Image (cartoon, rainbow, N blue to C red; front, side, top):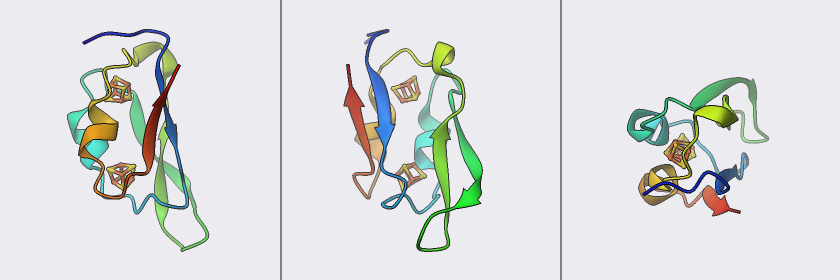
Length: 71
Ligand code: SF4
Ligand code: SF4
């Protein structure tokens, strides 16, 4: 599934940095930030927008519902 206009919106306060989304991303578009969220946890960011196909896999696997795919 490809939708170049859809991109993940990451709720950094929900993210616990488990890296599940990073591991499934086919484009290697996600990465762990060097910053901490308010819970003191490193969170994931969309590192390279151009590499994101909008497939939605990251949102599907996130156990904390921290990712929403938005057009
Ligand atoms: S939507 Fe797909 S390509 Fe884009 S960051 Fe998520 S898993 Fe990667
Ligand atoms: S799967 Fe969810 S909680 Fe885990 S690193 Fe990705 S966004 Fe954060």
